[in-house]
Image 1 (tube, helix red, strand yellow):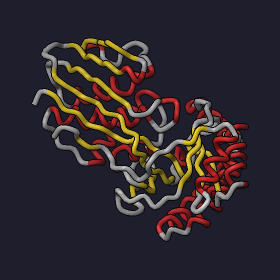
Image 2 (tube, one colour; image 1 turned 30 degrees about the vertical axis):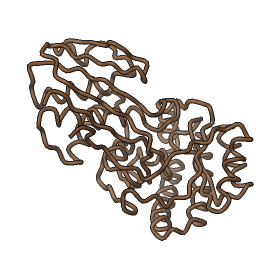
Image 3 (tube, helix red, strand yellow; image 1 turned 45 degrees about the vertical axis):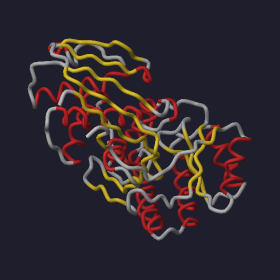
Length: 326
């Protein structure tokens, strides 16, 4: 086999933002916006990457130089993942990688993790290496740690397992909530128009935790309890309770100072127009917010648009990583 393609979904974090970095659970759902990676052998000792959707074309590096020097952000995860792969499964020839995305990295759907997972699946399949989901997770998660030094891996897990999952880092617990393919979550999603600076926000919370460990640790414990309650409420499809828990989670995130003016505005208007509850999704600062709305979902989405947000029409509970030409 000379060429393999695989795709992986993006994600939306529903509960447990920031606390998940510190060993607490979160709930994350995969979205039907996918990234595809195609990998083929090239018969040389050079690694080539063409990722126009990530603003990178005709990137190349010899196998001996992988992981050396400062890496462009758009290539860092893929390059470090490939380096780790070669350390475990030595190969004499390089590869050509091309990627294609159904969504922009600006939305906060986890494009770096989705492309890493798609690449890992295609790469291992190209060389006939069978991996379990947990083995695939370990390969991708190591690349994240190599590049960022820290990370919970929830977005990697969402890209691999798909569906809606209750997750504890690093993949100690991965519990599916409902069967994959069914999306009962009545969710409205709004994009603020602001790209979140995730590393900065994570470091900011880390600094707070180091300065006031008891206070911030207490907030994380409260979030943990909310996540566990939300798991039960989602499984029983008690959407009013899910909404109430979202709003409670948002208030705790505001205490951590990771929300933002635009996020707060979209969240507030969603609740005013019929949502059971709403919160930011992810690191905060910008990116997306989510709101639980059943009968009045269209009204909520209209309110998000009127307030200057962009409604994201995505299907949730999407299928995880898959081969596209096998």
